[in-house]
Image (cartoon, rainbow, N blue to C red; front, top):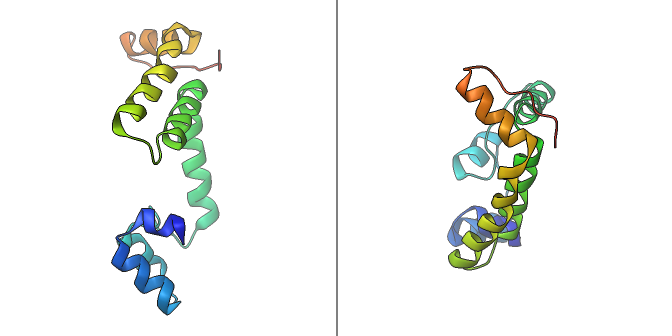
Length: 113
C-alpha cells in the first residue's frame, strides 16, 4: 500500500486498495506501476539485465544508492547524497575507461574498479 501511493496518485491508489480489484498488465503500465508489459517475461527480464550489465557496475551501484537514499528526503539532501556518491567515481578505472572509450568512439569495457 505504501509503495503504491508513491507510484500513482493518491486517488488511484485508494481506488485500487479500497476496491481490491484486479487490473491488467496494460492498465498497470498505463498507471505507471510497471515500466513495460510483455508476454515473454523471461526474455524481457534477461534483455533488461543485459542492458544494465553493459553499464559500469560502479556507476549503476552508485545510481541505485542515490535512488534508494534520495527517497523521502528533501531535494537539497538528495543532491548532497548524489554529489557525495558521485565524486569518488571520477577517480575509478571504469570512469577513465568510459572517457577513453567515448573519445575513441567505442564501447567501454568496465571492470568494476
